[in-house]
Length: 231
Length: 231
Image 1: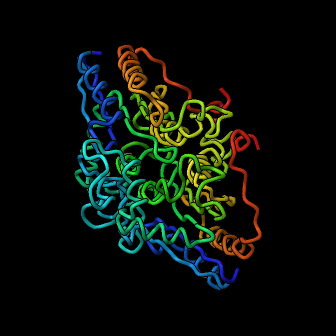
Image 2: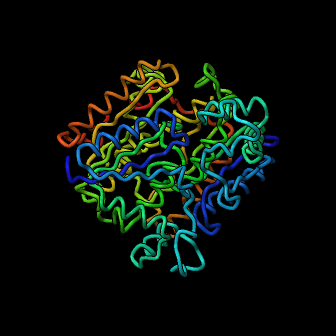
Image 3: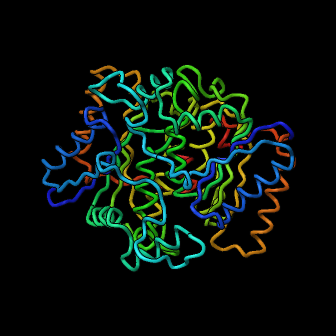
């Protein structure tokens, strides 16, 4: 939709990968709609995943015992976080929709993207206590996980060997995105890359492009326990 | 138990933290039993969390399109993974029990520990296809997640605002540890650090030490869907 701003947080090492193609399709389709699209290409940026005292500039508030949560909260308020974190927070703040594009690593995001979440979504910026879940500071924004799996869709069903895909999405969709106040759109899962043909991949790409055409009309999913698991 | 080998993968920045104390208690108690205890202190090691082509030495098998999974599988077989990965694999291989000690970050492990999982538990070493879940290559070993949370135990119940704690443990206990063949012992969760008193922390430390005295007699939990969620 013209005028909307989208941030794509992208975590794949290889531009020629299927994840790279999914990212490219999203940039093209959303730009065509008149959206402003920004991409954080984490591997190209060599994004730092480790949460350490290097994330704050200046003296820590407690020089004796380092608590990452306390120190980054203080640093956020004093504008004393490092510039790479600040820059990502600026992109999130401007975005109407944040799309995360990644291959599933161990039922979750790759460490480089986990580090983006650990470091960028800090207390004071993304939430406070109180000030989380429906009151999270990023309320009013949309988020969407677009991921690829090696395993097939059948493996990720309730009685499949890996369980319902919503089980592994719980820490991300509820514990992270909903916690920060995002409204979460249904995930875009490109299943079974280990066994898919070129033709099947083309279909998956086309279906992602097609979905994006009407993405702004979608209703968010419900992320609240215990409802989430009973659907 | 005398003669047993334990690896503690530890992910906290501050030795004086409660996580540091939990780690120390485990080293002391297990050493007292006659176990050989090794600690991988990830922040002290400045452990690399990013999964990149730097993880393989020598030429990639496909110089045109980089697939992390394919290249690290090949490199494992050729003994061409970087030495930091190889060293961690050696520690895992020798261990009877692997304990992960960490603070919960976004319903999951901190990125530095996620990177340990992404990079160390590679195909060929920890699993193959086929050769996962009950046939994972680390079968015969035990694993245990020992974690701290800011939120209280009440928040992590089925009807609590953050849902049953087993929901967020799913990707770790089933999707990662069980996938690699580990038998998973019940998690040790030290809840509510944001609101706990010194006295309550002492009780939590003592209860961890007490549990470790009979840890070798414990039966593993069930990690299979859909049973896991229906208990």
